[in-house]
Image (cartoon, rainbow, N blue to C red):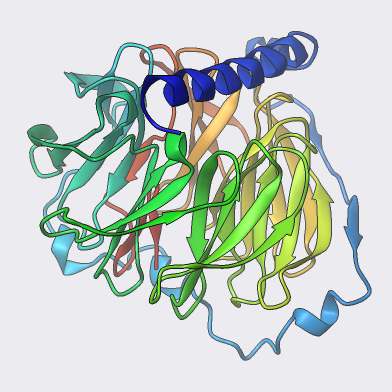
Length: 393
């Protein structure tokens, strides 16, 4: 289904999900938000160790000698491509159609730019030379030059780009056209369509790639599925039903499993990508939504959007090591280049929260526009970008 009817149908689905989460949030998020008024040093840091794992989980875990796919994101590992690029945090605000630029040294908004209707994420290019703003309702990509922090052009005719990724070899861009339930593989130099891959699910959302880049796993938020898609032949290879509302996806450092944040089930599903089976579930908190990997690749940060908390999962044990109560509605995450800070957009509000990765203490809250979503902190350590709001290898 195409055109206005399809757009209105998907908007109704999104509106329904938003209403549901806001209703739940009235009893969860707003209660958690009271923590904003306390001294962050004295705010409680809860420890959780709830995990359910299948008997086959250990069979899918390879020896520790397997390479770390995140080795290149360690602090200090900047590509020569970003030499001289000033550190900035770019925050897309859906409702006003703007991107706000924050200087992370002063924690001040230094620029506000109109980029199109309903920007969802700010995505670094594979070669780290540009930033793309996925303006979904404008069917366009606004291009930012990170050296100046300004929009330099707009690429039109990119049908409803909710999200944007790049294959590991950098030869293909993948536009997540959520409104049409498809992935559009494009040439990242010309943006010419290579192949359109229909996803037999409802609401393709977030993705990540295997260690060798030969396939990706993508969530379909509105039907509880995760699909496996090849990046060579560009076709759907398999499906696993996890239930709930799956959103963000991250590969384990050793490449053996994928972690999928599930805001409908208040936790993270662990998936064996070879057998396409769920092999574990880690309870984190209500509305588990966004994820980011720590600089040393030991921990996975998970935002619990309804609980107003951040959970810290230890990759080695697949358990929650600690939970930080920060209030608000934490959504997408970015780790600072030195690994000491976590930057978090508050989706149901108008702020970005900065907290310490050492103890979860809130360092700053920065007022931005309404509906902040997929912020990116740029530049970051890494050889290249896989897209989204800044996923590096």
